Image 1: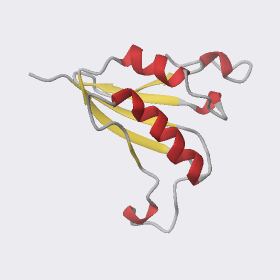
Image 2 (image 1 turned 135 degrees about the horizontal axis):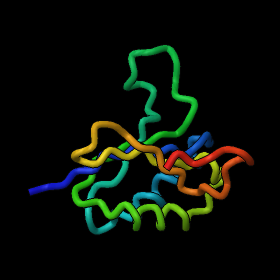
Image 3 (image 1 turned 120 degrees about the horizontal axis):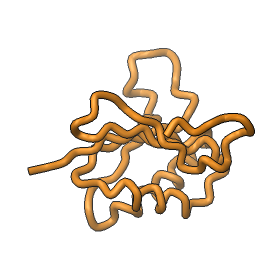
Amino acid sequence: MSLITNVILNMGTNTALEARAYLQRVNHFFQDREVGFVSLNNWHSFQSLHVLEVDLAVGAFNYLDLGALIKHLRTIDWRDQAAVQLLVREQDDTGFRIIDVFPERLPDGEASPQ
């Protein structure tokens, strides 16, 4: 039996080098378990003239410890902490929910939709 969690990670807007480094640090969480997140920033895979303007990564994980993943993400020295978000769809959910990894870094007056 499996319990799959689908996750989209918004890493904000970075240089290509920064995005690769962030993703490598994020995937350190999965070192002994799973493949980890994969980047959506390979614009050649899209049938569009436009490229993503934000660094996104996706993954599907079996028995993901979401709390531990969030704690791990909070240990990374992100350039723009307010931009770091997870969109999470657990196996029996009908849609995604948004988790702001650093809700205390949101601009004044902006509430976290958790």
